[in-house]
Image 1: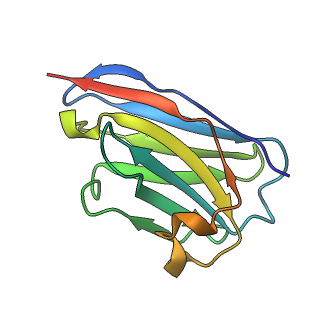
Image 2: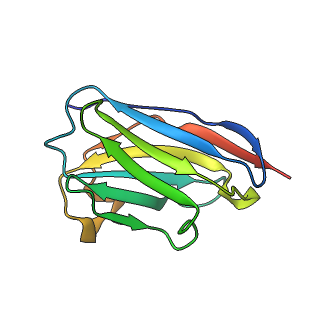
Length: 124
């Protein structure tokens, strides 16, 4: 069992930055794939970014060049640095953990563990 706790969300103006953190209850060394998803009101949950234990990454087209996912195995934490935020980035952001390979990063059903989410609101 792995517990995931997200933090770092909040209210920010368009063009600003936030860094989300996902702290895990145990070592993530053995967890191949960590990812960030988001869900806006009335929309389906969508992948934002994923990262494997070897550091390979995959991003949604909508965030490429603006968001960066990283993982610190020593701190059992995954981060999402979000720059140049847009109003359409407003959503609840969730951390997920799974053993699948990067090619399955967009299959939300394959993740074994999910956090409770953190709200990100971008204002004009």
